Length: 123
Image (cartoon, rainbow, N blue to C red):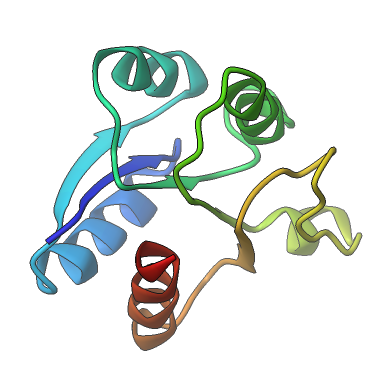
């Protein structure tokens, strides 16, 4: 199936997503911060990137998505985050500020995660 990179500083989220997506036949490669994620992406290109917003810095995922789009990373990015619950603000995808293909709040139902991943991979 697909090769998916997950960049999230929460090991529990990485493990849960890995278990769900591997059960669907996908190959998962984790990174636990922005620097690790960027290094992975310099070495290889996944079919899909799952990215958290808040890691070592509150906007690491946003900055990473912006940087990736600037260097023409054209694979789908799913932003999976709890920033809305943490800040109380409403966030969503935006071509300039949040240049991602989908934006979902954690926790995400496993069936919805699988559906979203399949939709993004089908593009």
